[in-house]
Image (cartoon, rainbow, N blue to C red; front, side):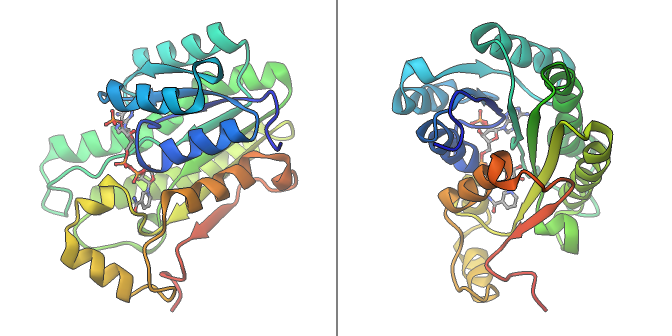
Length: 245
Ligand SMILES: NC(=O)c1ccc[n+]([C@@H]2O[C@H](COP(=O)([O-])OP(=O)(O)OC[C@H]3O[C@@H](n4cnc5c(N)ncnc54)[C@H](OP(=O)(O)O)[C@@H]3O)[C@@H](O)[C@H]2O)c1
């Protein structure tokens, strides 16, 4: 088992990539803090699936400082430490294009970018005391390449890359910080784009399919575990070749 006795906080783990990661992590021996913004029922289903002894559910909006503090403290109160933080919670808010209103722009940055910084700000001191830890952030190929229709989201994901690289330097040598950059994954977020656009994504991907959440969970596990013990500050693109030119 790759994560035996490790404690992981996975933000946004009621659905999608976060959910798949929580399930995989517990198969690998971890205890997990399952987090959701509002879908407590979905989060409880994940807990049911992994077994109540292996996790807890904490409802917290990770864009809010007070709720981030609550999430971290409930995790530490239950399991006593934090070995792994996966900053996965994210949302594409609309209108997210370049004509977006200021409220949506700011909310998009709060949910996708400020959240990652807040979570690290609160969790890293605990990891520093332990002199060990691993952080995996979810960015996107949109953050690397730019994209039409989702400017605010793309900017937030570019910011996550900078957080990854900056914090890898800040938190070395005991804590590693990495990111994964998916393109299109079959989750509610992608389903929201509609079948026509999904088919376009499929055709524009050399592997000719959309990733399953479990395929992303595998790469998050790799970066979180000792298999990646000499990797920090890296952004691993997991996109079926989508960004190849
Ligand atoms: N899907 C893709 O194609 C794709 C591609 C590139 C990058 N990503 C990134 O991968 C991550 C996961 O995406 P996904 O597709 O798995 O998303 P998803 O299926 O839409 O699930 C989003 C998860 O994030 C949670 N969440 C959203 N806002 C939150 C907040 N403010 N506080 C706490 N939790 C919050 C949701 O909780 P509730 O259930 O309570 O709403 C849910 O658990 C995101 O960061 C996304 O940007 C996804």
